[in-house]
Image 1 (cartoon, rainbow, N blue to C red):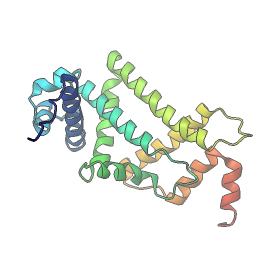
Image 2: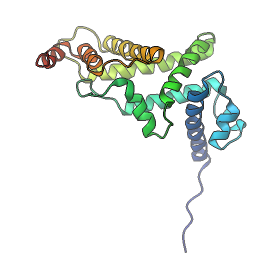
Image 3: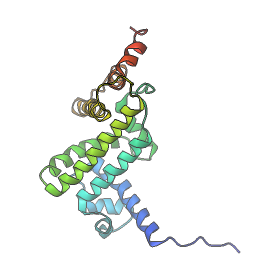
Image 4: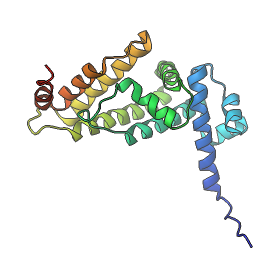
Length: 209
């Protein structure tokens, strides 16, 4: 006699519901933008009613923040040393998204939706505070990159180098969004490496020059 699997606990069911809503939300936000995205459509895409969204998140803003959290987890899983990176960083997010099963163009679409969300959150004290927590987590992610390749004689703190790495990486992303111009991979990687370990970056680039 085949033994039936144990029924899912309430906590497991809720986790699965949240994950399905987050997955659907990322695609809908990427396609429609933050403001135009409909919670009805997100719930329908995930196979639930709109009530499931409000049972798990604090409205559209709360759901968007949850998608940001999921994206950050994916980015942290792909944390790499700039001295080992060979691909164009602008394509990294795209590769991760496609590997997770998101449709083509989802990365750029969600980035545009994020700009909408940031502008909206800046006018809401509660949401702005929650967004700041995510931005702090983003800076921590870049600080972890800085820590991995930190030189012994570096005078800047890990946090300071992480902030500069974030400015370079996110700034390149904005240029890509605004003009569809991807930064030259070699130039970008050279910049990231000089921030992490200037002496090593110059030494490794010298033969190429």
